[in-house]
Image (tube, rainbow, N blue to C red; front, side, top):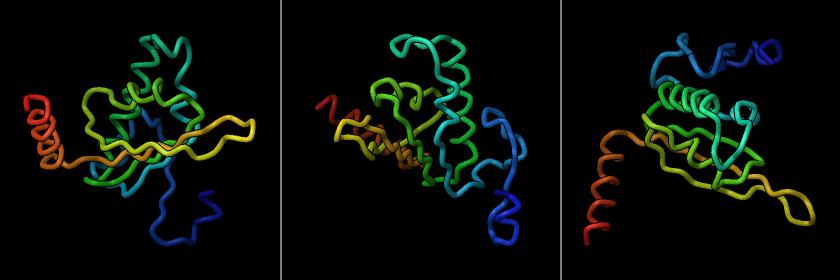
Length: 138
């Protein structure tokens, strides 16, 4: 792909471990997309993921969060059931607004899902937290 898009302005292809993207500055990426990388890290019981899964997926999610600009999106496409994936996406150290879309399925095929995770900027995250506390106490 890097050869194919070598003449395209504004695209830079890099190879890195998604769990440690030291070459990419914080808050420098406009959008991130995953179809398969996070899924490849997930194994074992979906009800009680092994510590290795929690560590690898958590490091991945936190790195994606770190490199995304404020209010940027991380799009994650998966066949995994949302109730098993959401806890992995909501690991410590991140603050997302999560939108879930069913992208296909029906007619005898498996559903697949598109998660759009918007990185919340600190003021937005604090505002949502205050609203949540108000609703819970009221």
